[in-house]
Length: 432
Image (cartoon, rainbow, N blue to C red; front, side, top):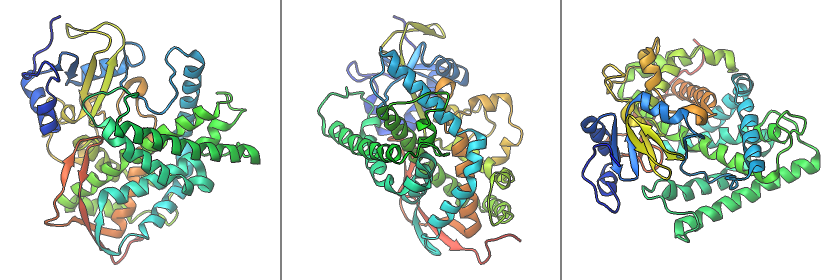
């Protein structure tokens, strides 16, 4: 079978060794040297253009499928479970529509301010852990509402860290293999599932199956998706909450690393944030247009979900190269969003490129994926990150602590590990 060009590889593991030394540099250099499609190994091809990426993503569930899905029952070949999963996804998507998320903004802003009250008035802040705590708190509110949000965060964080070495590995080991990481992942998932099932059981016993949180929407027997089993509810919530606390924390850390490096941009964000009313709602969030552009540009330069994987389900071709069932196709969002064919001056931080982006720029921007598996929380994430950016910038001048070592870690999400921020409180934070 004819295969694309690519770096010299080991017959056993392909380019794993070179990839592990510098994941980002390796994928970017290979894209620049070998073009639109290249071979990582005999079983893994990498596509590096927006058109090829969308060709793969748009065929998800037909020609291509997700490589791993830890959070729902084994639905392959089970039409009933597949139908339940699709119904749970539809219910969650309704709960993440702009109108539904807009209704939650006042309480989300209140949560953000309460968490920010615990930060130092001035001093050092470990960026990623603190933004993860904030994102986790907001995610728990959206998923469980104000009554149950507090009881879930520790179990979800346990599962997040248990998953890290599993999903970050370049070698796809079977789930049944009794490795330490697999055992830890299963134990954490079981603990979280039991906690969620306890909440579901209590709500059913109390007759409390209505509300505007995602769990209530999925539990509503009168909704058009019908009644879902408790196991499916738990799986859907685990998937949603882990996504909610996964990408936003590194994304927000990158936002403030960039704002620290560009103080004039940070001042513009603060000027916009100072005009917010005391009670922040969906309408006031719409006025944060510059802040939203800052978030989008940070997601372009440093996409947390920097590498998307798909497994080939049936024979297909990609620009004349055959791909067969069992092979994998990788999409390096990191290099696609830094390609000069799509973005002028691609290494530069230019939020205003998003005032009127070209069709080419829109197509090349894919931090939330694309196709049928486009992140259902895209609207949620953009609202949440815009809100957090504004409320932090309104309170503090943010710099990066000089001399504190940090590094880009692409193990799972692209994360600025060790990034420490230096907060200096503004003397005035409210409206002018």
